[in-house]
Length: 441
Image 1 (cartoon, rainbow, N blue to C red):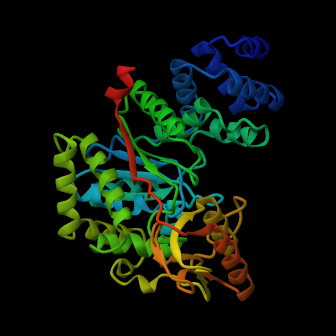
Image 2: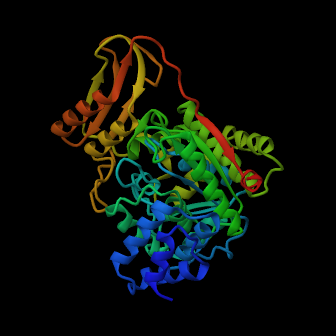
Image 3: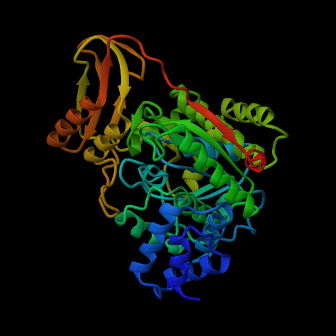
């Protein structure tokens, strides 16, 4: 088998065989295939695409390129949850303990944030003493007894994806549906869970800007999961605005705790309940989504989910008091308010601009090794569609220095637009895709 022949076949738009895909992924992992040939194949895939079988084979080959987590010794059906990334997305922090309170086992490996997409691990590490690096036996023990444990993703998971993603980033081949789907799902399959729930974002602050593209990505990932024998379902949700009222690690942790305590923003609560309900349904703890949602709502009301979060935090070295007393979390040293320049309605929230502001403030990373300021971020006083008066506070930014706070406030001011008339607010949910929907195609 020769890489030249594989390149030529894909350049001509022909489907690659399973053996050819496994050959190039193996060569990528070992370094036997040079970067220029890997880059050429990525460009050919980007232009010519891949069919469902090719995409599934590529995903499995990348998943098997490194360590495959074995969670079989942890009791119960293990369900993983993944979001394609958004601004203010703290749903995992609520949905995971919610699902655990319903009898689902959530043994989750999460990533750190890069750019304006925040990472669950960074948010959890804003809790004093909390550790996301645990020995495998401790991880298994906490997941098995508490029902939920969230740790940082091992560098040994899907190393081929890491190499190919770095090449895609510098060769203008990031925006390819089969490459995006296989990249996400290879890490999910390597994570070892039995079922997978996906939250696919759509809109200005999402990777997929249109509903059509988001649906296509969701269907592709559900199909991959199905072919790999892992029941998978996907929600398509809005990212034309930040989720909730905060952006930033400690601020989002605080908001997640508020929801677990029966308070917090309604959109965070609704989406967290929807995701947790899907996890409960896939784990066969309920006969349908209505029954699953009723169970999830009950566990949120009676405090069971909050107790799971408190116990997970305690077992992972953190102070469980932060759940009921989030003032224990880090807080930005300096704050600046952003005021409405005119009266009207908050008609647009440029989610990407808000994300860039959070990075500037220190809440996100421009590079993988960039340090974080856990107390930095944004707290909104108004939501999309709110009526505002000139001079009213729209948001407050938090940072370490006066200069950073001033710069952040200026960037945020440009991202919030006042409209003279009320505008239509996009829905929070757009679609729900299961294996049945994919098989109908």
